[in-house]
Image (tube, rainbow over all chains, first blue to last red):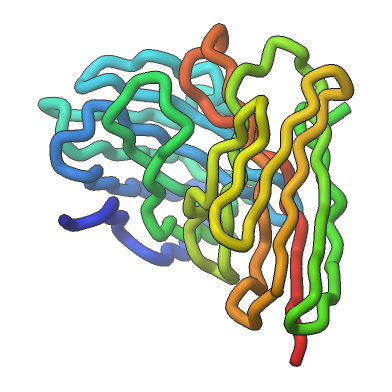
Length: 114
Length: 111
């Protein structure tokens, strides 16, 4: 069974540009999550989809971040316009159960904004 | 105050030795507790869930103390492959299904 995949693995962009990150969850997992780790800090929750619906987006830092999950399959996270403080590693995770601590993480996208 | 606090380490452990470390959580409404393992520049992976009665998985033992709001992880007979960052993770159903992570405890097992 394929795991969670993320694309790209690395992205370097200039401040003010736009970047779109993609996540493909494990097949059959209705729950998809985005997390972020900025340098020197702990991993922090961004948002949670159940199928195509946003269940919880309390962790989204501001309206420069837009997440979508078309048809309840893959998800994208767009940052527009990117700022220096957006640099970090963006992880996607998926789970089968709604209330489950067993979330399967993708390898992450390392975003550097210069 | 951070919601989940961990000693960042590193804990330098001789191969074959036992190492233990804790994490504390601030929200008494926390309901589920986990240890995740993260290797350098890799994704976190679930190591084990932590139950109120304590639980063991091979060389790993996890304990939960709700009264004092801390979780512990003990690794016996440490292997070189146990070198990693161990993340303490908390989940509150009232807050949805988001996981709250500690900053991690780094463990280095040396020959």
